Picture 1 (cartoon, helix red, strand yellow):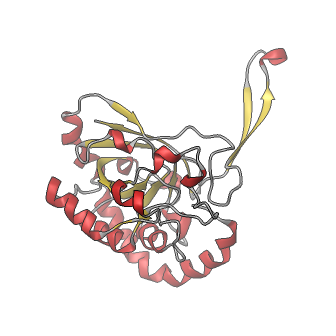
Picture 2 (cartoon, helix red, strand yellow):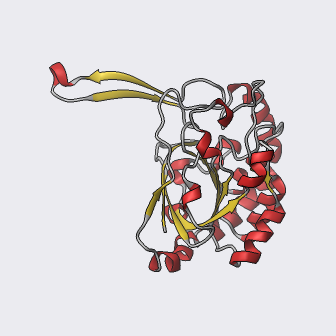
Picture 3 (cartoon, one colour):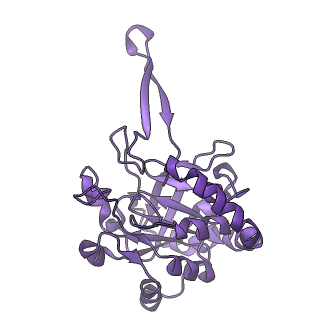
Length: 271
């Protein structure tokens, strides 16, 4: 999620929350390191099937502010140079990408500094696709998390909790981003749900939409609570419908540009 019109609001908000979350981020970092360890049982039982959770994207891929998220410029062509090479201009928060803590917090962890053990984790898929088909701004609520736990057991320490809303099938259609009247609309997490996940020891959250918050969010409450706590998010996931609710392991190929607030990522799951 990225919108230049929000910059001033972001600055003001993150300064007011700095002291509140400084201690929480330290606590979170200590707990989240269990992600890769928690994934080991699932890895041992995996069938070997790999599911690509990443959309291929180009300058037509929808973005939060409506501007192209990636631009190509030919630097070398096979004729006469003997090889191909593009110069790319990329905005961090486009395509399937990571939101690092720094994206919505002053002094938060940058994407290159995310502990690598947090980039392999048990994957829990919460399916709200039926509700999202009726309500384009549907949210993952605490009741959805409680229902998942009731059906599948406790959330593993450091797990990634992914929202499956069915939105991935809308890529290429304007409804992935907007209602017919142009109003932004897509599912996301509720703040109450992510607070519950933080208490449960989850390490990251993911969505198959453009933003961790629903499209009609006016305050980006999830971004302002989840990211400053030292956790990260993944936006624009693909193919969550091909995964079980529990038992898969996610591999998050985070970019490593120094000081980055996030960036396009290659994300896969092993089932």
